[in-house]
Length: 100
Picture 1 (cartoon, rainbow, N blue to C red):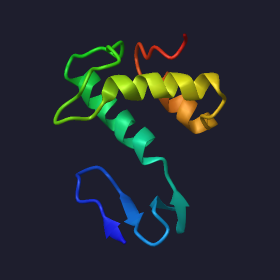
Picture 2 (picture 1 turned 180 degrees about the vertical axis):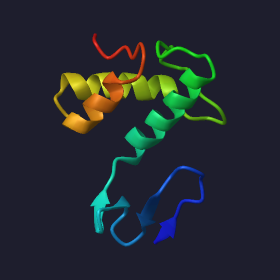
Picture 3 (picture 1 turned 60 degrees about the horizontal axis):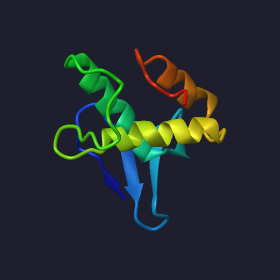
């Protein structure tokens, strides 16, 4: 297992099981790292004065595909693939364009 060294992140990667995990209340729980990373980058982008309405090819920072992330979150919402917690976190982002 490897642990992230990124400030504000608390996940581990398990090479054996090929999954991302987080310790939640003493239990290892699988997390959706693409969701988590995109959420963090979108928050940074918004705090820096950006908007949540980005083009599909928009890349944030050093290469995160934030535009594709928004499109994927829209697809997941339409397919009913987001958890209640994920939906809530996305709804809390100002101007998040998840409705088609």
